[in-house]
Amino acid sequence: MGIVRWCVHLGPAVSSWAPGRLDVFAGGTGNALQHLWYDGNWSAWESLGGVLTSDPAAVSWARGRIDVFARGADNALKHVWYDGHWSTWESLGGVLTSGPAASSWAAGRLDVFARGSDHTLYQRSYENSWTGWQSLGGDPASTPAAVSWDEGRIDVFSKGTDNTLRHTWYDKGWTP
Image (cartoon, rainbow, N blue to C red; front, side):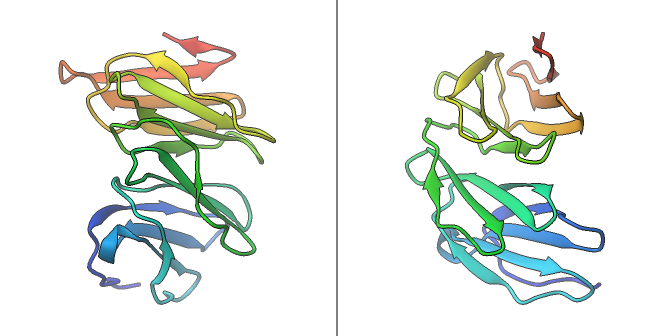
């Protein structure tokens, strides 16, 4: 594969929607979202626009589908997706003080997490339509990380203000 060189200004996110396929995203010139992919060979970088103020988060819930999230210049959650072609950017609101984390437990299901202006963890989910922001509490001092390892299960991790690793999970309800 080798090294793919590009001057990035924000950290990368990566997702895969099929065996042998990687999609990489990073903030480039002007903090616009940049994208390249690997499917046996590396593509050239392409700009997907937007103005990012956080590292992006990327997740795939089906073959040929990728959703990318980042905090925008207005501190709101921004979203763009690929489903045969790239969408335009949409704002999902909120006042984020961290970058987002994204996870999917099933086709058509997305969960996005970020630290809000009150420094607690917030979540927003999609299943046919977006829910409003829900506070999950806690005291994250970092961008969260999220993963799903089974349908209906999400684990979210962050660094706490006391420098300990914090963990909350959803399995028919949020714990702890």
